[in-house]
Length: 131
Image (cartoon, rainbow, N blue to C red; front, side, top):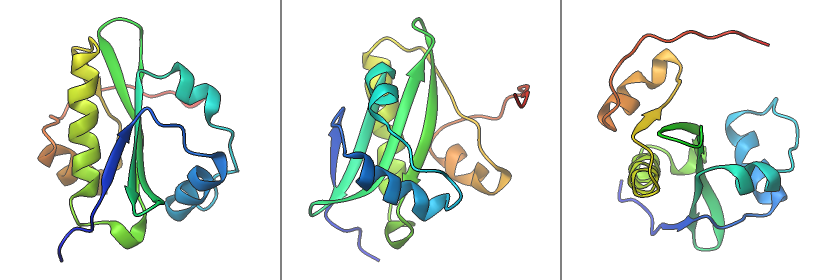
């Protein structure tokens, strides 16, 4: 399938309703969220748009030094498997590097391993504690 015409926007601020609708397409149990504060404090965020519709999103948080963390990458199910997620992640990598990050970390579920490896990530060991 040919990818749709998609525009990426760096550090645009989508309205909460549009972002909540997109998030619910992947995580229906997620409660509605106000995103402005988290978007203002992250290293970057990128939105993907088809026509005027928000269809993708990713943000990158930082420790304020050299480590950055890829968070909430999502592409609406109707637009998946067309290269949009890869474009979002690759763009996030370039922008994070340009803004001073040296390392980009990501956590993912096993079924997403091939996607992240295809984007250039390598497997590492990490720890996790549920608060």
